[in-house]
Length: 415
Ligand SMILES: Nc1nc2c(c(=O)[nH]1)N[C@H]1C(S)=C(S)[C@@H](COP(=O)(O)OP(=O)(O)OC[C@H]3O[C@@H](n4cnc5c(N)ncnc54)[C@H](O)[C@@H]3O)O[C@H]1N2
Ligand code: MOO
Image (cartoon, rainbow, N blue to C red):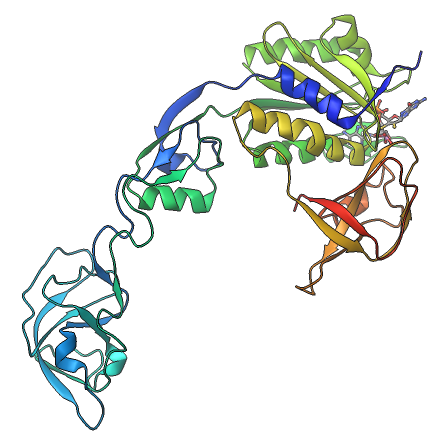
């Protein structure tokens, strides 16, 4: 009996209502790349934390060199050499200079930097005198001021932020050592289908390589999860149920099955898991990705049953699984970035279902990015070959039947 068809937003809302945030833990910040912050990060010190030079050269008194030029060279006595990382604070008096490098502490008695390029001698081993032949633009030039970037006590990063490479650099530079973050989600990826070959052996008639589970494993890692089980089972209920039992032992937080959820005779995920009441099966008003399975076991294990067609699997991940996985980690922004671009080619879209069409972005004209279908077959859910070219999915409203060339569309960017 055909089940009721529900909207994408309603299915996602059901999922997000059902998943619970993972516990948090405090770990070394240097090891926290990829995690999601559970608490705000407040700067522990200023950036820069001390006055320092932005050039290799000499710390001087501006008044000494303010009229320096090739015609009016100014000779200064070098009184110190200050490598970066040392805490020297030599006295630089009128007529004197201290050699220093980019990042070296500024002597408290000097006020301006003259780079090597503005001296006759440049960088040499002789550290007796230096001749300045170009006046600094202003007093204080090439001196980096404390806290000109971040001040101690500033809110650096909000709870719910992903600690990517740039966020990590900022937090470490602000003197932070530890962070409270969500525990890494433990995910299992299980493809189903007796036609699948996982070990690279030659394909017999009717067989295909398992391309879904490796794709999902990569997507899971990209979304911050640890893949604790990656397997493929054939179309037997007992195999699916055995995996679920193993997952309890592995303390998995989430499992994603692909295949076996539609209306066929061997739809193993559907038959095994609905019998155990672990997963509910739904039709969602989207193409691809219409059949969807979702449930939460009494143990708290979150179960997804994604359609086996590879484009359906990929789209379902983006629309349902990834947001859930990020929500479990407490991430504030759980959706992919959506941009509005013009299409290069038109295509057809099914009436009554929101279409997610794999598209390639052309970014060669920085002023006007465009999108074209990754495959000439447009959004056929089996077109996994062209998926390689997709940078995102054009999101086409359910009532649209024809997308015109040159029309503006929303693209969910995934690459
Ligand atoms: N009578 C009906 N048939 C189908 C319906 C329907 O409503 N009534 N829905 C269609 C839609 S839409 C989709 S989507 C698929 C979903 O099917 P399943 O989730 O049950 O997936 P399978 O039948 O197991 O496989 C579908 C397709 O995908 C290939 N596949 C499966 N797993 C993998 C994998 N790991 N790697 C690569 N390719 C995979 C599989 O060989 C099939 O070609 O059902 C439609 N049918
Ligand atoms: O909805 Mo299916 O997911 O068209 O291939």
